[in-house]
Amino acid sequence: MHRDPFLSFAYALLAISIVFLIIIFASVPDFQEGAITEPEIASTPAQKPSMSVSEKKERFRSLMVPAIDKVYADLQQRYIDVAKAVAQGVDENEFAALREKYRAEDNEALLAALKPHPKSIALAQAAMESSWATSRFFRKANNVFGVWSFKKTEPRLAAGEKRGDKTIWVKKYPSIEASVKDYYRTLARGTAYSEFRQLKLQTDDPHQLVKKLDRYSEKGAAYGEELSSIIKFNNFDQFDQ
Image (cartoon, rainbow, N blue to C red; front, side, top):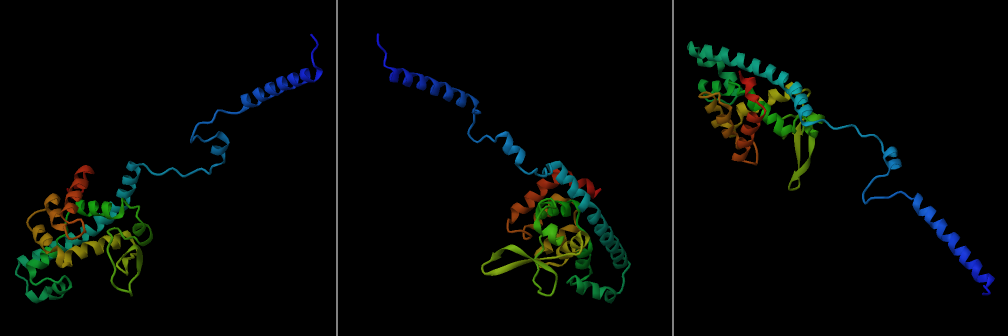
């Protein structure tokens, strides 16, 4: 049979093209959807690994426990000294200035203000309010407890949210210890915590006391429940011994 030379050439060219395509596709890697190729991984900047939960909590304790221990010890000693003087029938005028400072009507109210609440509560609130010492307020202002500022003259930091058209400001402290001291002072003086202070004279049980901190947060009663859970789960009551 006579074969057309042009047709033979076309067949040969087609065969060569098929072989060429097979070789090309065989060399292409098999991609999966969403997969990252090795060169892409190699070119990605190395990310600093984030802390684990246990590491974050350990760091929190190392920062907060010494400061709370120091403030608590100072407050407890002052409370003991004043309580002893009151029991001995000291002249009412002797603590007049101290009563004014703590907005206490009498010496009993003064003692309620001076007595420091359990460290476990301070630790639980610090953990919640500072996101275990990782919040912006903590990092940039040493503000452990989210305490607001209402004075333009004091060091402060603008929060990232507003109330209506008003900027929320939080206090800026020179140290963590200063923040802890101001926090204890806030609970010792604020009218919102009068029931909390009265209960302090009757019990040191942190799980009972946190129920009276419902006005510290917009969460209301749920706030105390969360604090109690944090204390239990992290064994913070060991620091009350």
